[in-house]
Image 1: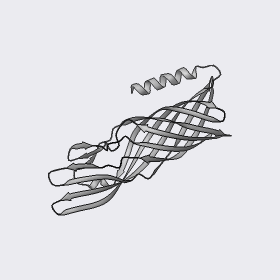
Image 2: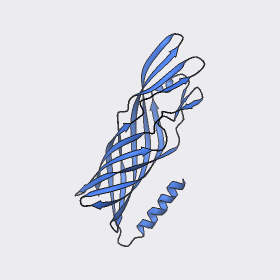
Image 3: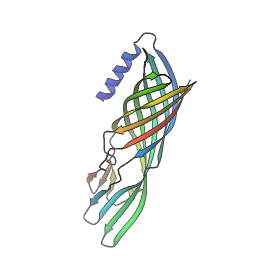
Image 4: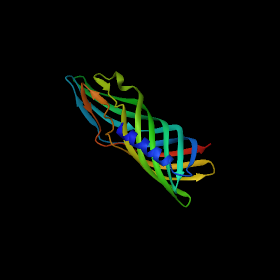
Length: 210
């Protein structure tokens, strides 16, 4: 909450610049996750479970943005619906042997990136912070015995990259890092687990200025 209030205060201060130019538009794009390849080992009274990432797939996002430009700089907050799907390779070891299955989970969040940037020639360079507000998750793994989902209401990260404007079109290529470890929503047998790495992703976005 403190981070959001600081961002709002920065936004208000930016708007106060004389002759600030304001534009509004829509955005949509694709993202590709880079996730940890090592697994989670969980144990309960009956079984031992090995949980690995089989495929991260591609995500998509779309929403609205506004750009405030003044003094050669710009501030660009956006509101983007984001959806990503991950396939897990889950092995359950028990007295009856090893049971292997692939389970998919789809994660939906509302992303709020706030980017600051400047132009050098035709290229834009930008960086900022992003908040991920959890909406819901659709999971095949929910039927796994002892498994529960415990998502945080919000998580945070950062973005940086470059972009180019062509007529009313806005193209951006961004790298995103996050502060929380991936899979920290996984709870098995009452114990919390997470993969060893924080998730990162590459985002390609196209916008249209109204």
